[in-house]
Length: 178
Image 1 (cartoon, rainbow, N blue to C red):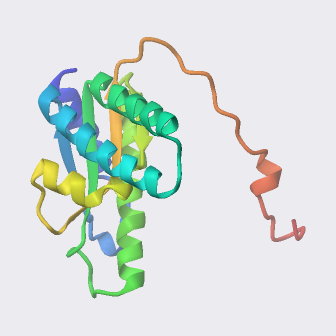
Image 2 (image 1 turned 90 degrees about the vertical axis):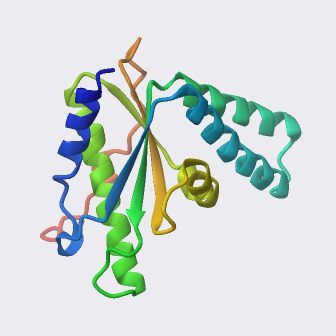
């Protein structure tokens, strides 16, 4: 995938709205196979430990780890979306939450931009479960809090559409009371 396409996607992502216009998102682009492999090992190491502590079977643990490592390896581009923890007006829970929401909005913008470029994209929340491992593997600043991974590439096939909840089940109309 051309570097210019990745830059265009990230430039578009930065136009996401953010609380107080703080723009707390930070991006890490990973394309090197050895870095993706190290990141995959770090994250699945944490995944294995968490699953073991939850009582998962060794078979289930290894199956999930193998799938995760394959997905990381197959993605031509992995973007790690981070939130800069220091980019807040005041250090409160609500300000931190607004920063997380703002960062997530940039992630959605990133996926839409990738789609517009003809790429397939997949959001993965592993970074939330392995923030320290992700930060250490990529040598990120302490203030960069990993939030998500985005796997990007040109799709070989169109995935089957996922089931969605019916609109009426998630909609509240004030005028009618439902």
